[in-house]
Structures are given as C-alpha cells and as structure tokens.
Amino acid sequence: MTDLYELSGDHDRRLARRSSGLLRDFNEAGVLTAADVHVATRLGVLGGEPDETVLLAVALASRAVRHGSVCLEPATVAEIEPSLAWPEPAAWVDAIEASPLLEAGVLHWEFELLHLDRYWRQESAVVADLTARSELSAPPVDESSVALALARVFPAAGYEEQSAAVAQSVRQRTTVLTGGPGTGKTTTVAGLLAVLAEQAEAADQELRIALAAPTGKAAARLQESVRAETSRFTDPADRLRLDGLTASTLHRLLGSRRDNGTRFRHHRANRLPHDVVVVDETSMVSLTMMARLLEAVRPDARLVLVGDPDQLASVDAGAVLGDLVRGLPDDGTVVALGTNHRSTKRIISLAEALKAGDADQALAVLGDAASSDGEIDFVTDPEPGPLLRTRVVAAALDVRRAAEEGDAPAALAALDQHRLLCAHREGPHGVRHWNRQVEAWISEATGDPLFDTWYVGRPVLVTANDYALGLHNGDTGVVIRRPDDGALRVVFDGPNGLLDFAPSRLDSAETMHAMTIHKAQGSQAKEVTVLLPDEESRLLTRELFYTAVTRAQERVRVVGAVDAVRGAVERRAVRASGLRQRLQQAETTAE
Image: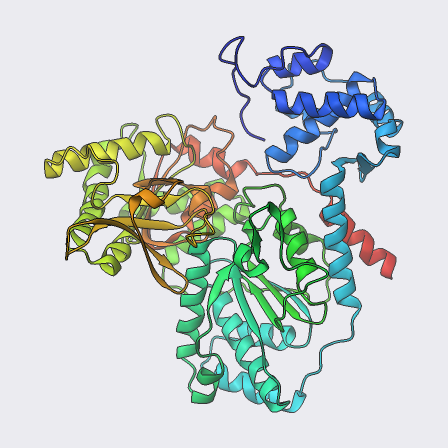
C-alpha cells in the first residue's frame, strides 16, 4: 500500500461529494477516491446490494488494483489506516459471502480474497493455460546430441548451473528461469537457444524464436546481451544458427491495437507462430499482460520466462513472477541460478543482505564502504547536494559534450555511465526536485540558462507508449545537435538501431537527470546513486532498495540515513493475489 492522500479542498476531484456513510468516511480520509466510490455505488445499484460494508469492500478492491494488488484481503486491509471505523472482520466476511454480487459474478470470494471479476478471470486463465501446457507430452529431444551440445556451448568450468538449467529447460515446454544480476540468466538463454536450434536443424525444421521484454530499453538490453553471449560460442555453426536475433517489446510481439490497450492481434484464435518465446524481466509483467501472453503462445511452443523475483513487481496490478516461483509445482519448471559471476563482490554482498532481509548485514556492508575498493559509497549527510554535485554534473556534462558534437552513440553511451535514482516523484527526495537541481548546476557550470525545454544534452524518458514512433514507456534518449545543419534531434537506442526524431514529435517525455527506481527496471548503468527517502515513506521497501542497488554494474552510492536503510530492509512490498493459491490448488487437483 502507498500513502493516503490529502484532499485539497471541497472541489478536489478525488472527493465523491454525493457519497454517504462508510464510503464517504473513507473517501474523506484519503483512502478511497471518487472513482472507487462510484464503482462501488454503481455496482451496488445494478446488483441489488444495499449493504454499505460490502460496497466498502468493492471500493477497496478497486483501490487495491490501483495500488498493485489484484484483489482485496479483508483480513489485513485495516493496516491502511487503523484509526478508521473498519467493519468487524467476521461480520464483514459474512456479508461479503452473502452478497448478491457474488451470485451475479461481479465479485468472487475465494482463498479469503475478494476479486473483481476481470482479475479473477485473468488469474483463472493464467492457471488454466499453464496447466494445459504442463499436461502436454514432453517435447521431442534427441538425447544423444544434448550432452555434446552442452559441452560445446559451455566449454569453460564454472558454468555447471547454466548447463544444468539448459538440460532441464530443453526437455520441457515451460521454464521459469530466475536469478539475481550476474547469475548468468542470459548465458543460459543463449545456450538453450543454441541447443534447440541444433535440434531443429537435425530434424530439418526451422526454429522460430521470439525474444521480448516489457519495455523498449529492456528489449534492447536483452538483444544486446544475447548477441554478446552467442558471439562467444566457439563453434561457428552455433553462431550462425542464432545470427540476427532481434528482441521486441511484449506489446509489439503480441501486436498492439490502437482501439484497445489491453487486447492484441495475437490471441487464442490467432496464436503467435514462434516455436520458442523468451521473455526477459518477467518481474515487470502484470497479470493482464501475462494472461494475454499465455493465450497468444502456442501450447506446444516452448515458453521461457526470465527474471528476478526479488525485484519490484509490475507497475500495473499483479506480482506474477513471484507467484509463479512460489506456486508452481516443484517439478523443474522453476529453474533458479544462484552463483554470481560478476566481480562486484561488495555490491553482490549488499544485494544478498537485502534479499535476506538482514538490515544489520546491509549496514555492515555499507559501513565498510570507506575501506572498500570503490564499489560502494554510503552518504549519510542530511544535505548531500554538495557531495553529489561533482559526480552528477560531470556525468551530465559528458552527455552534453557528445550531444553538442552530434555524436548520438557517444551521447547515449554517456547517458548509461551514471544514473540518479529516487523513490518518489515529488518532495525533497523526489525526481522533480533533483531534475531541477541538476539543471541549475549545469547552468552554473556552463553559463547556459537552459531556457529552452529541448536543450542540447537533455536526457529524456518516454512516459507513454507511442506505437507510431516505435517508442515505449521507459525508453531513454538524449537531445543532440545535428552537425550538418544544427537542428535539434532526440535519439534513442532501440532494439534494431538508433531512432531519431524531431522534438516536436514526442508527446509524452520528461527530463531524466533523475528517474524513479520503478522506471529504472530493465536498465543498468555503470554507476548508480540511490537517494533514499525518510524512513517513514511507505514507498521505501526492501524490493525497491534491492532493485535500485542491482541497477549498478560497477559502483553504487547510497544516500540516506541509517534509519532509512533499516526501514527499507525491514519493510516488504506485499501485494494481494490469489494466483499462487490457485496454482497450488491446480496441482493438488491434478494429483
């Protein structure tokens, strides 16, 4: 859950002025918005439900979706604001179970959870599709060549985990491949594709492969990483079989529709043609998108879902990857990689402490920063601006110099050298404040007042999908000056090369000297500075902190108080969902 909001006055658009009773009380307290109240009121009228406690549950279920949960858990919902007059739990459950809205199929009560119909159907569809895939016979495999292929694509010692993961995955239709940064997930994917490509070639078949990720930036990184891994294969035949692989966003893979943002051209009646579908950064995939993906993938195709379940979940409703890891049967479908192959030992130690929820160990790692090899800095100064200015301005000026020269690749590369990450958008620890602060520092350093919104060297973050331009929410770019005519252009590093646009063509973009940790998912930078908010912030969670730290490839700087670190480690981001229980129930039924 996130913080309650404060009404700005009698004309605040979030205020449902015609509401009454419990709905009005919870609306005025900043728990419910007008939209939540109107959904509950309308459903009550249409479904013949007069009980205000049930209508409160409907409104809270609507609120839950906006805050990332796919359902309402009445047993814990009072934690939002304990001072309010919550219904008595047992009587509340009795009223929900007796509601005509359940009989009408508008609501669903299962596992002590209340679902709106849409999300209940999506959870049910995900479980049904995964179950159907598991009930198919295992894909045909030429066992005599698998061992030889594994020895060929993993010739060096130290990759036993990856080899075993490929050996397991090649024999099944669905694989959930998990692991933290540096554990070799992409290495495993490349090895799996090489083995499958050889198998297909031996059977005189074409292997149609799709690589996808939730955002354009993540897709570009997936494509780059897979190509880098395949280029290391010692056998030219393995490299040739996977030559030219490209990645796309999930929206593009499924075929976006202009008339419907949650439906696609590929679906149950028009399946994807691919034999292998690999989805990276699955932690960012919402329940809705997972339902659409599973209905579009052929049941007999191999599906490989890759991700880190300890990262932040999707911005939209659902925590699908975590539910799959905890809910799927222990039959090898979930393959976990644990050995980290990167040299950033201290960053790894910090990440492991965060995963384990060990605040003392996390602080110990941060406390050793002064004697470390430069991988970690811990800044506890309550006024960190002067300490950050040198590094932040240096990074911004590197981008600006390349942009002034019109060198788009160099400008984009400089953009990935350093990332300033915030938990909030607003406030002294938020993105807006720090974007303005960095621009003020740049002006002081260069003498350029930056009056023009589209100034040279401006880092840009796309905030909404634009299918006409091939840009997606989360894509990052930079404004450059074209050398030949001095015109300003905005360039992006897309999955298939550079994209170049006039600034006037970008409708949804914002400055990105600083960005939220949520938006940073699916990307990495050599150096990351993490600005922690005060320990009271309810956005400050273990998953948020872990996600921020693991964006760093070589160095991480944590800026915040000791209490903020401890608060982050000890607070979990919990999302209500019935997917895990539904998967476990399906397994029990099958047995």
